[in-house]
Image (cartoon, rainbow, N blue to C red; front, side, top):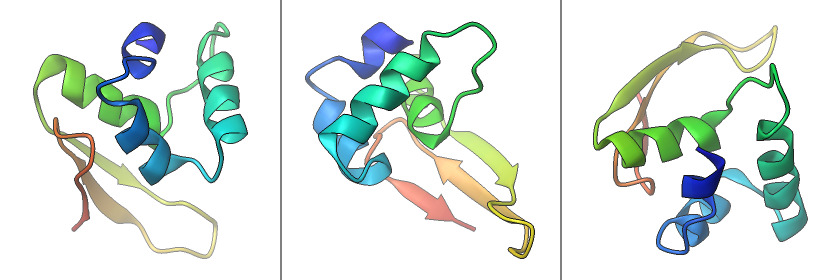
Length: 82
């Protein structure tokens, strides 16, 4: 997955959506290479792109936030909050 995230055809789209800076994006990639590291939205979107499918995630981003359904599509630039 890390190799796919580094693919120049999708890097800019992922970086624009999921990282505030180049450094943060690079840290995400380095972290994903560690055993036991969970994927975040960026890695899930890259998975959807690689596998050419849509992934639905049901998540809560903080203790105070409500639960939400997130649609990550194979386009990597489209994320919908349902």
